Amino acid sequence: MKPLRALITGVALAGGAALTTMHLVPLMAQNQPGSASSAPLPWAYPVNPPAQPGAAPPAPDTGVHRLPTSAKEFTRKQVTDLFNPPDWYPEDHPAMPQIVAHGRSPEVRACGYCHLPNGQGRTENASLAGLPAAYIVQQMADYHNGLRKSSEPKMGPPANMLALGKAANDEESKSAAEYFSKLKYKPWVRVVETKMVPKTRVEGWILVPEKDAGQEPIGMRIVETPEDHERFELRDSMSGFVAYVPTGSVKKGEALATTGGSGKTLRCSICHGEGLKGLGNVPFLAGRSPSYLVRQLYDIKTGNRRGEWGPLMQEAVAKLTTEDMVDLAAYAASLKP
Image (cartoon, rainbow, N blue to C red; front, side):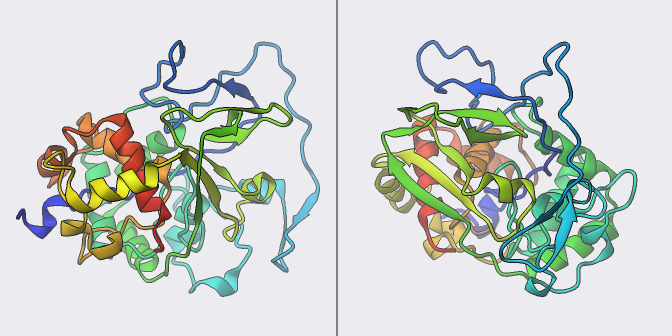
């Protein structure tokens, strides 16, 4: 058996989110014959389309926005403030340290902007709530030392996180890590097995269903999108995600995760604990974003995500196909955190 720390760089912390763009583009069925996208896994690494020449900018939103589950109200300008993110539910978490609530202008944006004040995270970045503090600190060190980058450099959130990781100092990383580690991760992703999915577009580094566009075959991919897009845009830390996964993928992922697939990989529980709930400083995988998990597996396999235990984790993913990654991520996401 390999040491418990062998997979410490398993699947966890990722980049922060960038501001949502209003430029939209249809997303073709990814990983299907004839797909024109050059991204490694376009459904896992959504890239915003370029601005259309001559396109008029959207009219400014000056209204006040509210949520049915919060007594707070914010303007769109406040919602998109990188250094003072909206905190719709201040009673839902302890007092945030400076780096989480406000960051350090101009280099380090507030951690709570991308990862949300309660650490639940979003599909384009990472869930930090409940991760071991030492693990988070190590990942920040890896970013700082250039050991973590994305297989798709054009995807904004991971690129932003790489820059932030280089700019943040040790005290800031430790403060944020201690804060997020004390929070409890809540069920956040609803996994649905299906053969057909809504047609989607890329908007703000995520997949968004096209209105009245019908459905298409899911193929070998995961289509993860907010349960409520408007609440997502308002950075509502109580509104989660739905992840459509191929029919049968959860069961196949369970078999691979619990047996190692006859030598294809290692049993995930050896390092990530029973039920994939984490073990020691090794991160939990249960209930996390499956598209995020696929990105981490792919980044490790391609050598873009390294770190202290990178070579050992690379050994664990070396034989995994895209289908294996989809199955493993679907299974892990389906588990109760």
